[in-house]
Amino acid sequence: MSTNYYLKTASSTAPRHLSKSIHLGRSVPGWTFALHVMPECGIHDLSDMITWLDGKIRDYKSKIVDGKNNELTLLQFIEVVSRRSDAGRIKGGWDSNWWLTQPAPFQYCRYTSEEKFHQLNLSERGPSGLLRHQIDGSFCVGHGNGTWDLCIWN
Image (tube, rainbow, N blue to C red; front, side, top):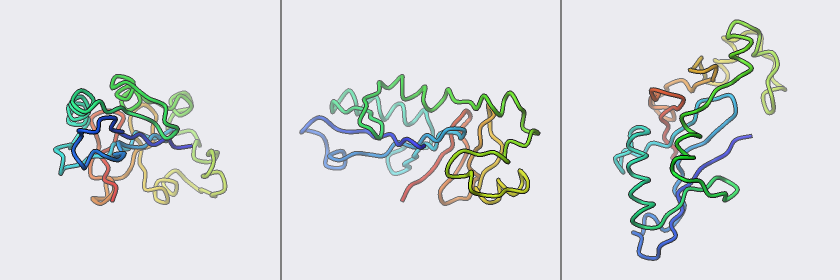
């Protein structure tokens, strides 16, 4: 199950573009974090996101929340993004047949090889046993230097 993360503004003095939730990214078990980069806001990587969020939290009393509206500190959000791994793939190794047994919604697919899995899911091997998005220039525009990918949502 995936979890989306948002910035929500608590201050009535916040600029108009902060008056609603701003998507920060998505966490999917077994995958690198899909960090929502926003070049128009100067956010090109995690370090830019941290600086931007710190300012919004301090200046506009904004808060970071997950899809169930649970509040996170900036440090907790950074850990969600940067401290990820897939213990099963680390233990079994990339060369085990991990792609044969996948959790929902993937379990109904019949993959014949790891290559086929990556082809159908636009994925590749990533750090810490995680799957990572293939850079396609439209959704995934780059790989972070840790357990996150740089993604753009339209």
